[in-house]
Amino acid sequence: MSLLIVGQTAAMSRLIRALFDGLPVSVAECPDSRKAVAHCRALQPDWVLLDLDLAGADGFATARAIRLAHPAVRIVALGEDNPRLHQASLQAGARAYLAKEQLVSLPRVLRGEPA
Image (cartoon, rainbow, N blue to C red; front, side, top):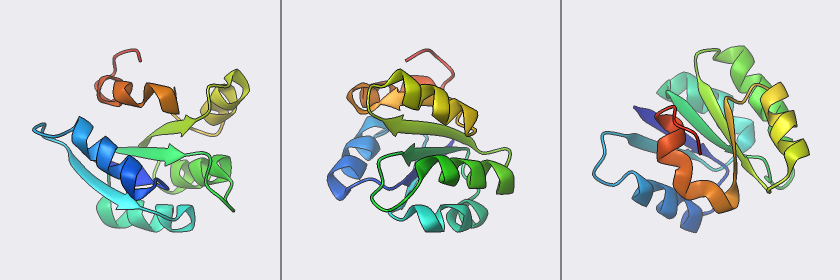
């Protein structure tokens, strides 16, 4: 399984990588949402973890662009604990939504289990 992290800080990326330590998951990073589609093309990840709170970027537009260019890629949107953001991310093409406080649930979500 492969995961592309889009838009996380270095500290958050380290935490996410630690969640998969010892598991057969390759993790790559793309700090800029404008380059996310190109990274998906180059890396062909199974999953994208997309931070909706990117400064200067529209996370929903990024999700739509990824889904349009790479329909097989499954997106997990990450944002505030907000039902409107949750619903909007699903409408933009995300497979799942996690509040940042639920990040430790990410491995379960990637396995298709509830958060």
